[in-house]
Image 1 (cartoon, rainbow, N blue to C red):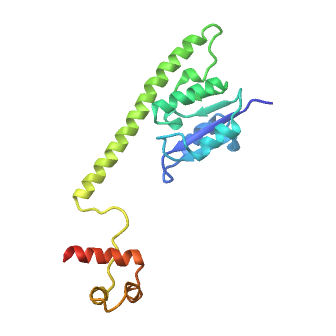
Image 2: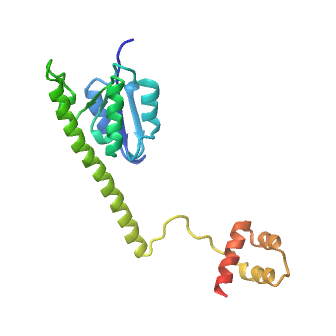
Image 3: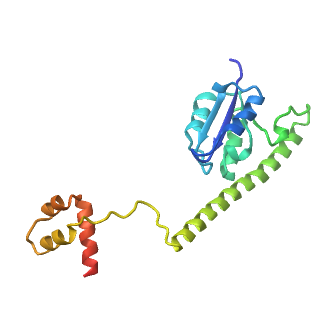
Length: 203
């Protein structure tokens, strides 16, 4: 069976663009059918495209090309696991921003190239992981700052029906059942009791 070359591109969200990575692959002569993409976070390896690539496409002797190490993962531990996986399965990984991965080492000098690659991967893996942590920290700080300014997150609070006070009073006095109260106000059971609980706290 002929050895094949696959290309993997990733961005962290659906809003981000894959064009830059795909253009880099096209310059290498990539066939569109061999380009696998994900629009998912690099915090772990559980991604639809990447999982399919490893389980169903890559075989021993194949080559996988990515534009940069952080496209593979932003977790240093995961990067090391994947590197070991590729070595064990004799899959060559080429990383466009690590030039030593792109060339064939001279006979007898393979160990030198492997040592240099391991150092670069260790350093770049640390950078990728630290960047992910920094992004996460900035997001948390941004959310905290927004909350301090009164910005509310999540679903907007459901407004009480106009006849709520009247219906609630009748229900509280035992004049109507909760089911009748729900019918009159047009709210669900959960919402009805949620509003009732809020009223009880006020009293």
